[in-house]
Length: 383
Image 1 (cartoon, rainbow, N blue to C red):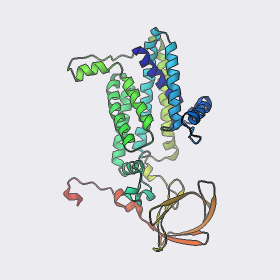
Image 2: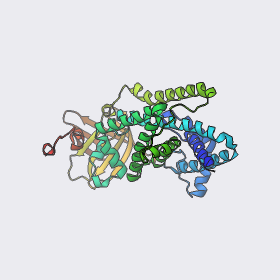
Image 3: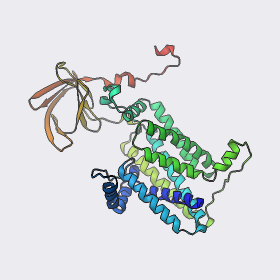
Image 4: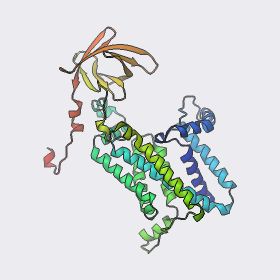
């Protein structure tokens, strides 16, 4: 019974790898998952979770992901129940090999994203000018991490080291232990700061635990009982399948590395902090102190954000229709033409909202304390 439960877990993780979409690998996973499970997922969301407004994109922490997990657990149990007992060890072994390879690729993806500052990116001006207590915890965490390149690069290096150790059989055990430590930290960060990749990070952690299935008892004897042990250093893959496995492993890692690096190769930028921003990107303070409008922010992803004196915000996606006109679009699809002028010499921005004319002064948001590259050896030096 125990062997079937463990094998069922391995089969579930394999199905999860196939059907849970990883954006950096392209859209094909999302497409075939939607084709196979989309209608069933929509029906289950409507009848089990009683909602018609769920996102059927299978992203982490969505209702569609939860339904997908339920479906895959049932399928895994059925598949395992039909497998003859003598084949269980072989299926579990191959599933474990694929699982640890998947963990390595995911760690490489997030490791390089941290090194290139693409995950913990520089806080946007509207975040820097918002009151600490008014922001959600996930934004607070992400923004704080984004102010330190040293931390981001260091964490990325740790994840890359763990990934590389996993790829080589002689260092796999240590690499998986290392990755479990990293993933435990990530899981508690996601839970503690309400970051919406809780289920994905938890599944990665469980995958790493399964990857050490054969090492837990020897490690217990070595670490707790202080006994001498000999961990297996040779791959357990059957000799007849070894060439095929090497080809699959090389192809998967190669494809993944191309997918990870392509956006950086295409842009030619390997530090997101220095990536080009739109012309008006930044923070502008309304020069009319009596106006209810306090700040105007331009986000790097082409959003204009209006903040009033109570720090309530309203945002629109914008595009530049011509040299002196912005097209603002709200979330209902409504559009508004806003003439503007920007005087770089005196840093003044003029926007015309219908009959209302707003003049705002550009702020030097990059000089704010949160972005200053300060470092103090002693506490005396910080005063």
